[in-house]
Image 1: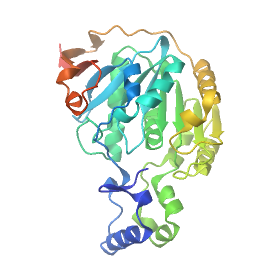
Image 2 (image 1 turned 30 degrees about the vertical axis):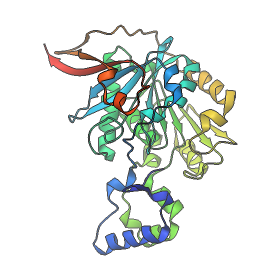
Image 3 (image 1 turned 180 degrees about the vertical axis):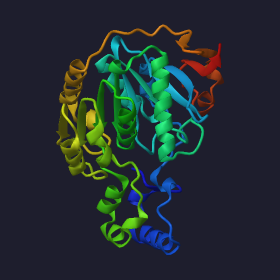
Length: 330
């Protein structure tokens, strides 16, 4: 999951070690460093399923100057697009099997790596991941997608990022999968004695509990009953706090990361019903120049993927197009 020490995951690190670290921090008058939240993954491992995906590689800017890497899958249904926020300890190269399953929805999908993950530059912070989300949404709006056509989908850590964006820019719908209530709540669950001794040492990082009641969009929540990382009860709490319209769906055989597999056709049928309820106007993507008052969003450069660093890591990387995007004054 997340809450990472260098090279390790806090969830799988010994309680004695974590307790010792936090006691040292407490004696020094410090709170938990924000970097402990993230398990960044820059290692690219492409699976066979990537050959079954049709996508365009994208580099896009954030408001604070970072350059992020993403995949845009146009889809056959031009009415809606899913803005996909993945969890921690992964990157786009690991998501091909999941994205192949999402093809059954026929929607467009835009998925990207946060700063510090995969090809995306920078170091992750909570505020930084929110900037990354804004940049991804900005990319979609400059493709012509409108807010009533965009579905935010977030898994685990990505659910917290999607939720924050929904507060700022309400989407047509918000789908949360395996969400937690807050980082301190997770620490309380995994290390109750440590949290009881040092409650002040854990700032309210990614406080979904405090935010979800203010979301002004339909909400759908999925959670696996066998999730050993984020307690299913956390989804129940978030569901109770959320405003209508909302729905909560538990997958009896699913854990933290396998809902789309274990949920079977019922999972995808639930998705389709949600998409139908929040369906917006039809919109198409044409490429080229995208106008914005005072600026033009332009494709600067088209690079074949055999010049892409990913090709050097895996000779079987398919020959998709790679776009470098940026803002230009008129």
